[in-house]
Image (cartoon, rainbow, N blue to C red; front, side, top):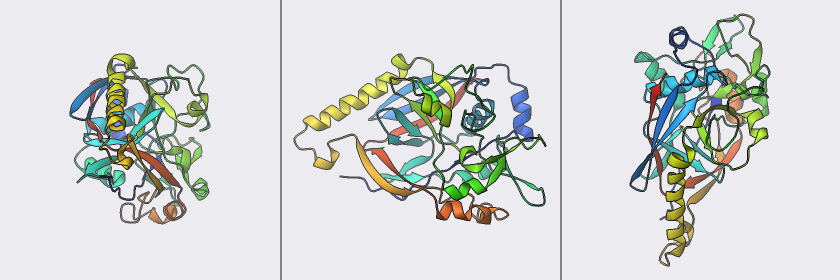
Length: 309
């Protein structure tokens, strides 16, 4: 039976080091941390190791590690499955329905439990700096971040930080990527609005256009040996659906298309950010819509663990 999905909102933003995160970052012993993501699909699990790159995207890597250490990603799912990417990190399944995870409320709760997060800030008219819990877009189109001499680009197996498109009015909102630097230039919010969403790039051809727009911050350690088996299992399952004469017509492919989903509805609301929520009102009201290709059988992110710092 075709799944019914609730309205989905996705969000994303810019980044900077908080005091606690800065201390952890300074104490890092490796330029290439490693994480392991355990995916489950159709009763089987698939462990995929990724090697991250601090030289490519230091803020993004630190932000991702902090979320992983806080357990944020455990139990989330792949909400959008395409021929070139698997998108995850922002949604869960509850009672058979895809449910948005309230990123901002969750990270604020985790912060109260002692976690710290690398994040950008919004500067109010009185020069007060307000944390946004979002990470800076470390890619070429976001001025000051060149793609030259990077370790990783958009090639098969790339781990990429994702953010959703914002309305034109969001360009009126400026953020600062590093609040500890008084000389840091203001940046447009849309390109500095990444939260927890990420994807693994599965395209065969390298994609320079995506390199300019999204931050690649890691690479699958053994794509063919660890990630490809998951894709093969999905392909086998899809073939079985097509061959099954009793399968309902709307289940004869692996994804269900969900169109016209309003984005950014939880982006800095007055409830979560009483001091600055009003500044993001136009982003929520005029936010873009999106269409996702949701798997008919959930692909769950069981856990994300840091294997090497």
